[in-house]
Image (cartoon, rainbow, N blue to C red; front, side, top):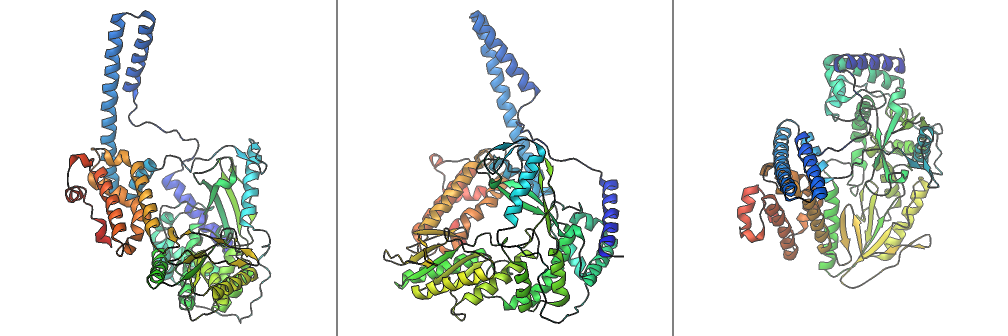
Length: 588
């Protein structure tokens, strides 16, 4: 039995069992927001008040006016009581969700903070000329055209057939049942299914029989060096970016839905590839690697800037922006790069099989579009893609580095910062990087690539790429953190405080209401604060003024949590004890 036949047998058995045990449910369609405190009683008293008001307007009698005032008073009282009851019920629901389903708790808090619904699709889209389209066929055609152009950048026309391995065939150990068991257990739950409709929870529900079937399936795909067609298909769901017109396709971000079983197979391949390549990757790469993260790259660059100012030196930085980096990866060149890193034979062929006939379709409000080929780039949502991309970028950056023994760059995936105390060395570095990017099918976005000189003096240095001058900026946002010419973090703390203050206002109805327990309020704003406020606290120690600014922001949020103000004249220590919050300086 071939791979596709075996997969279709397994898929039919699982999907039929799911329909029999769980049934089917239709989701989607237009959504209507309901006011929590509105009910039939409130509707009746409001209508009565309006009728009495119209009656008094016509008669102008004192008796009708008294009846109207009594009805208005009754409507206000019942509305107030209904609102209080709805908030009390909301607090009880939060308490229940906090114990039973943390996921639902976070979704409920996020729904209060984010007013616009990015998942509500529009039924009308504009064509490239800005003219609206109303027919379903035209709408599907427009979405297909947009994502085809987006996922297949101009100039990248690889079909996957032009690669010839230069290494001898290498037979590797077969996939073990223990690897399959680990992949199933380690896969994320509660994620949308791909084209096959099988989720991770369905695989877990099959228990030992499911593990045995998946082991047989993976071993067959590994042995034949082919994967089922469903594993190569991607459903793209457009998600609105919450800015711009909903009718414009460019204001949407495509989220890819892949086969969960295919991702389990890719997870096993990723584990084997990482074991062979991790020690070969440069120390300057902080993205998608265990023990490294975004905060480490920010801290390293922040320390460089601080030491430069401390010793009164100059540091030249160029923040490089790559145009559609993940979508412009040349797959034939990627396979050759993987061979250079020791990936060949059966392992390489299995990776190539996933990309051999890559197809995508867009799920819209008007239905699913036609399937179209994707011939370049790494797949969004696939567990293999981050590792493949950083290997590809590592090859480019190591070839472009003028001094490999010196740390002169920081990378988080495609976010790259080049730095050097010598401007000529940095200019040579950016020139070499541009040449290597062009040789590997990548392209530097000159308009978004900016340079900064860190110095105590007002110094600007001119850099260029192929004669095109780079913008000299006074500040730049790198990995979500602001870096300024003076090397200080005042601007960063200011922005973080503004964002934290904005979030506190968005969550104000929840934070101020007495019916919500303090522990849930604390959990709600702690959920959103780390990304917007706590990240740079490791750099606050040398600056007492910024420590004070951050402490003031934390105290203000604690006051809002406890529904207190400065006029109550309660010390911050007492308020923090009530809301179970720690002072910001304890995190430094």
